[in-house]
Image 1 (cartoon, rainbow, N blue to C red):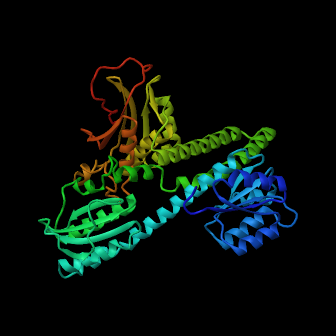
Image 2: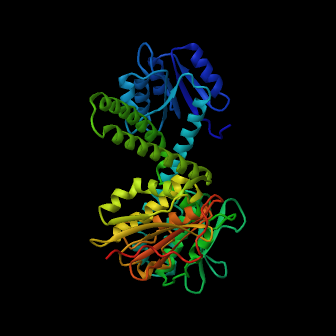
Length: 492
């Protein structure tokens, strides 16, 4: 049972349907009912609901009207359209960016699953919104710290900012002797996490905080780091992440899981699937028209578009599973299948900027979660294209070396700036002002969870050389001699 009851309104003119839904949902949720659109409007006007489930066809007002009314009353309400068919108005409503969920009749256990997942997604969205709001509130932190005249004022700025962060229970700045300079110093033992960060050169002044949630903990570490910068202290690389470790799992681990899913995938999956289903139906009609009128190439083009849509859905499903469970489901793929999948996504982008060359021997097999592994190849290809000079080449080559399948991407760019080379696989490291600095960090993390490794070195005569190495399957071809692979030399 939920600590705070979730209130659901079931709207249907069929007594048996309402009774069935109430029987299914009332064991876990607080459920009210309405037998018509008018009754639903009255109920929605009288109180707030977390979820509204409405039948599409009713004598007075249809389900689209009911759900639109519910959204106007509360934009955060979860809306579920229950129907055995779709008319044109309903079909168009389900294609809007803020479309309701749709559950068909008979629903079996789908309605319970949809409600549970929708509530989880709403909670994720609320937490993300709170984290973003907290992060944005820190945008002027450096200016405020710079205006602080002494350690006492720095301490007061830290505590004041920390206590505005969602999830922070207590925070204080103390001296080495334990004297509280600002705020309230929490005890080391207690509920949630506890962190202790030095904020001056000799550790005589420290910020201590207790709270709940990884986002709050990361923001406290950020506050401490900026205060260290203000005091002229630079921690050794890696040390600043140490306070984020808890129970063997780090904040970086959590951040990369979420980044791998692309920040919005969990919330957008429902909308994407609905839109792609509609597109798939339209493509079928276009294909039929092409066959009837013998339009050259139309059937093939429609087939490619449908395949790209299916690939997008599989990627979002895999990423959603990954962000929720932190696990992957690997299958055996040939290297050629993986390369072709990456080219389907990034090939056109690369060819606009450079000459793309590939070399993939047949029959090489590797066990990967295809949608996630493709992101590694796509990221390497896009990065290579972005730095390619006019007339440059981007080479994607696959080899087997010592029972390992080695994917190599080489470009003719300037190579990685030595100033960031040591940190390039860490989050938020970038020299591109338009980039987020997550691409290579995500790629490294995906390789890690696959049991593989990604690496960089400067090519002897060209630009950057990146390798992604995975164990070959037992069915892979006989290994070549154990030498490090060199990509194809530039033509001419």
